[in-house]
Amino acid sequence: MKKMIMTLAIAVSTLGVFAGEEIVSSKVLDAFKKEFTTAKGVEWEAGDNYYRATFTYNDKYVFAFYNYDGELLGLTRYISSVDLPLNLQMNLKKDYADYWISDLFEVAKQESTSYYLTL
Image (cartoon, rainbow, N blue to C red; front, side):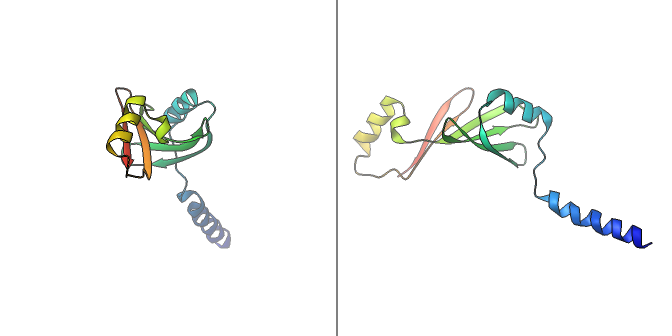
């Protein structure tokens, strides 16, 4: 009886250790490893219908979003204004020369790339 109670106590206490860790499907992990072979510091988080990987790639912080089948939904990364396409840089200088950009990030999907900024 003591052994059974002790075993149960150990089992319950180890559940708490793994409760915070995200379990990512092998499909998603394989797709990620194939796409981002040199990614460093990868951390995973699960959403309602997706997984989000946070990592560094080519010295940039990147967020990759995958569905449960391992399909890449999109990427986001923080960028500086010099990383914008030239026409957007020129428009920013012309229309918002008196403003300071506090945040700027790129959202890339298979069909398009968008840029979001906070002034």
